[in-house]
Image (cartoon, rainbow, N blue to C red; front, side, top):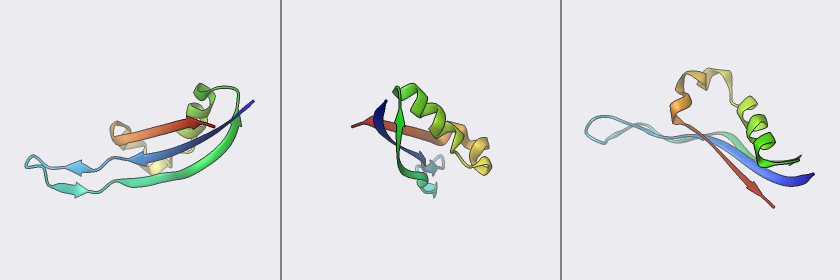
Length: 67
């Protein structure tokens, strides 16, 4: 097992002119977990995404880093 950290955030949304209409938001703050690899961490992070944001998956990013 290795130590990893992950976070989930939602990118900002812009209109056609480039104006921000919905700012970036952290959905899951940095979280430390033990896992066998980064794929397992990605699955855990995906499960942690709040249900109300599932319609905006194209704007959601999961970041994972090992220690």
